[in-house]
Length: 332
Image (cartoon, rainbow, N blue to C red; front, side, top):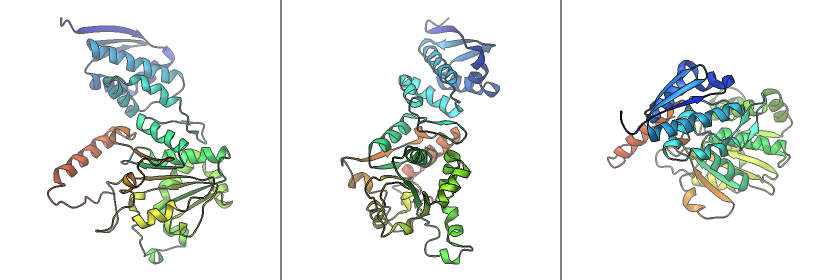
C-alpha cells in the first residue's frame, strides 16, 4: 500500500447524515471529485480514504458541513464545491465567518448570508462605506445582497426609503413606442430588482411600501436634478451608464444616504464607441475614504456550477481574441 495512503472513519450526527450525503450522494461526490478521495457512506458512518493530505482535507470539509447543517443552514452543491476549493487552499477555517454574517432574514424566515469570501468583503464594504461599487460577473449576488442590505437598513430605521434604479439601455429613446404606461414600459428592465425585493421583503409588504413611496423603482433618467437624502440607493447594471450618467447619479447622494453601484463590465450593452462609466471607477475613486470598489470573480458565483465554467470559458475566449481585433460578444 502507498505510504501516503490513509483511511479515516467518521460518525455523523444521525439527524443530518442524509442532508450531508445529498440527493443521490451528490454532496459526497462533489467532495470526492474535488479532492481525489473515496468516501464510503453507510447510515451515519463514513469512511474516507486516499492520499493522506487530501483525506485530512476531506475530513475537515465534512466536519465543516456537519457543523453548518447542525446550525440550521441549508447548503447548496455550489457552496460545498466552494468549501472544497477553500480546503485545497488551506483557507477552510474562514467559512465560519460567512454564516456569522447575517445580512437579512427573508419574509419566509430564511437567513441571508454571504456565501463566499468575496461576497463577505462586498457586504462588509457596503456596511462600512457611504459608496460601494460591486463589480463582477453574473451569479455573484451583487444585486441580491445589495437589496437585502437595503431592506435591513430600512427595517432598522437607518434610512427612511429605498431608491433602486437601472439604465434602460435597450429602450433608449424609444420608450414612447412601447405599449402601456411608463411603469409597464420600464418594468422589464427593473424585473431583477423586483424579484429580489419580493424574496427579501415579501410581496404584500413590498406593494404596501411601494404605494406609500417608501420604495421607489425608476429608470436612471428619473434621477436627474434630484438630491436623495436619508435613502439607501442602488444603481444596478451600471456598466450600461455613460461616464456622464455615472457622475450625474453619484452626485444625487444627499445627507444620511448610502449608495451601492453594481455591474458587470463584461456585459456592456452601450452603442459602439460609447464608454462605460463603471469601467472608470477603479481609477477615479482609488484610495478615497468611504468609497469602496469590490471586484467579485467566478469564484464568487453561487448559481449552478456550470455558470462558473461558462464565465471562465468566455474569459479565456476574450483574452485569446483581444489582440486579434475581435469585437464584443454581445452577451446578455
